[in-house]
Length: 201
Picture 1 (cartoon, helix red, strand yellow):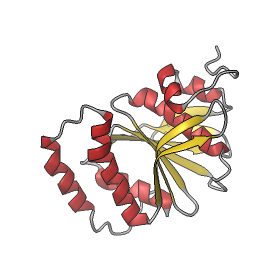
Picture 2 (cartoon, rainbow, N blue to C red):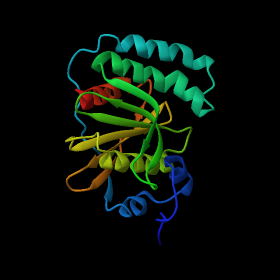
Picture 3 (cartoon, one colour):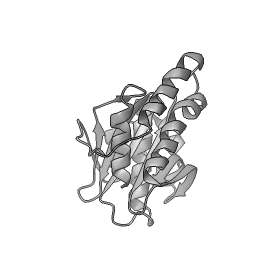
Picture 4 (tube, rainbow, N blue to C red):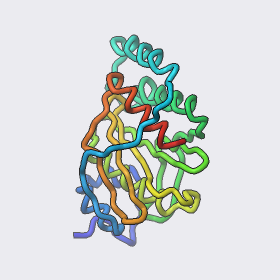
């Protein structure tokens, strides 16, 4: 069964709405898919402001409803993204428009990049499963994007704000891997930040 019709136009958000199985979706673009515990590299340096960020998040969470994607983005995700910029001096693009084909186009919630490395973050209110399929579409689009250059592994994450899950696209063997580990904010803020920082430096 064909998921993507070659004569139709799709956006990343429309791919989310297809509710397609991730392995079947990526196969249509010539990729294989596997789920495994990823041993992602972590930054080993000092994180001088991390405890302060964790304290601020813990302080406000009892007073904020996280029932919408917008509230999660404002209260949780944006704080992680701006802190990531602090530690890496990376460029941050929000709602970044990307089109590489009629089947791979739309807005990336967050695209953050340094000189040689790109990370894409997809924000979802609750549905991590179909959100991850959307993330794979965004990673495949980045793989085909002329600005990516020689980066061998493309890293992405889908997040509800308080839960983060990583995915990697290996460009040489055309495999997309979904991490079985989940990172919960604020409890797992430190390992989460160390992975994101290391991917950009």
